[in-house]
Image (cartoon, rainbow, N blue to C red; front, side):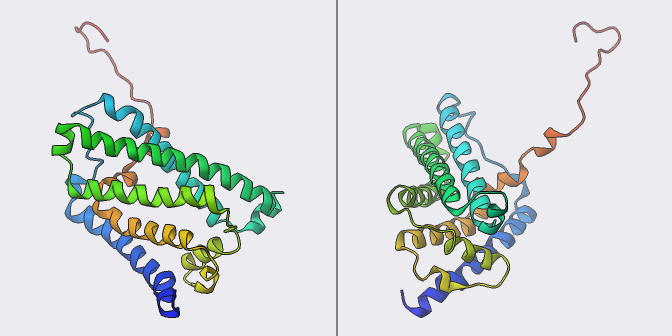
Length: 227
């Protein structure tokens, strides 16, 4: 990769993607709030959704937690708690393997479901197809890296991501990184930029308040039967 393309890919493009991610969600919420949801196809065919959506969501949750914990937290913090780089890499490998397998199985399940169920296929938008294909590409590249490359990202990819977050990008950290990792990262940023225009917006409306809201008390009205 030439110097210009390297700067474009690992300084300019990430900030373009993140800007679209933030502004795109804001724009979507203001202009299209009625469709700010998962657009679930459960009512079209419930049974075929159960397994795939559960597997996919567990894979997505583990992927987000794993990347946040492994990339955004410096190794020196892990060292304070007695987790050295070798132990960190060991945990990251197996966690990534489990998350990657779950993601691949879940996305393929959802793709096959939308392909084989006529009613669901007829109600699938181009955004749905593109989103599923992009999820398959990103998770497939991630799983490939976990299984076949075993590259140490703790002192290259991870500090580069943190440099992007703190607005002090250091593209030199990405120079020795294998191509498959670079493709995984760039495709993930493409997915981030595209997500505001898909059903993925519903992750911001997760009912987390259910965890701490007050109980709803149902009282029997005088003169009525039953609870």
